[in-house]
Amino acid sequence: MAKRSKRLKKQIIGLQKQIEKHELKILTELGRKDTTQSYWANEISKKFHPQILQRKSKLSRKKKR
Image (cartoon, rainbow, N blue to C red; front, side, top):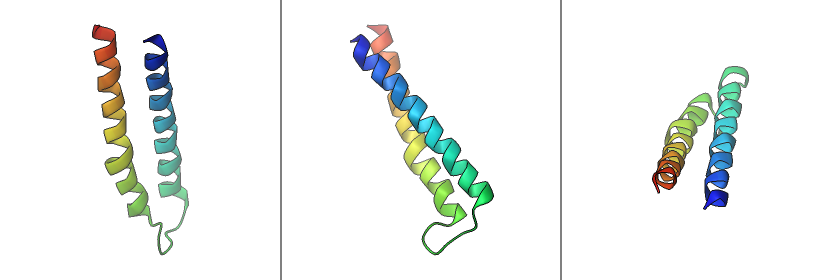
């Protein structure tokens, strides 16, 4: 099960990097027709944060065993 927890940790780190990239795009890029700043913010809140919470809960369940 060590491989599973290691993979979950890597996934969490990868998602956090994606959030950083999206936050940078919110600050620097001007809005386009399909990718506005609100689009990036919604993607962070609706896509990445729930995935991180899910991975962390799985990881904590693995540690309890």
